[in-house]
Image (cartoon, rainbow, N blue to C red):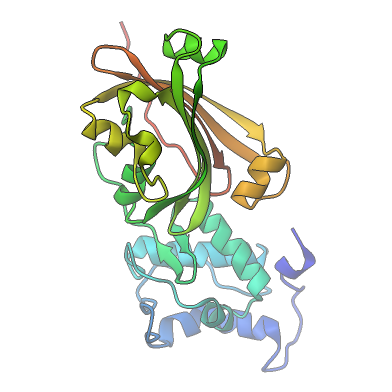
Length: 293
């Protein structure tokens, strides 16, 4: 916690002191009308706390609590854009550094999503029935979240399978494989680095496809290949220099690595992939059930 994020000790404040502005923030949020580009805050939303020196929580956490309450109450409906950062800072009486820390926490909680050049948006609810055990492409995940998927292609080449690749895909060593490395983005924000490998004979046109905009899963479907299940391992790894640079994160930051082999309906291995997700921008949710004999 930085000094700028912690409220000052209680003291007698002049009318325009920052603590006084912070204490007024909750009333400003409720009383101010809607901004031209964003929804208004509801006067009826249940607010767990105000911002100010009398509250022991740091200002960024108070902002998280207030905004979360507004979202939960429906004052900020799914898909709506939050007021601008400048407006939020003025209403809450906090600095932009403190606000950014609060917004980052809301992203981690799955309540808001950043959109480059457009602002911050309340997350749309996930479609029902997709958890657990849903096998979907990155593009399908983005569409489900109401976001735009795109990619930066790092490599798209055909090369012979090495021993490890041939073992994972159950093909002979030396079999021509199509290797596709991409930075995966949602609304132009880097989310993951994806390394995928598959026999090029399954879809010979793959080297000609523009995977900056196209989905690998869709291309395989066009080739008549129905992907049915995936064997997946999940682990946390520190970002190395390449992954950190590609995702725009600090060297050594945690990433969530999904290592998969995807099979078709005949249980034939089709695709091997390793995907490094930014730990700050991706969350995997699933459901566990208990069976009692």
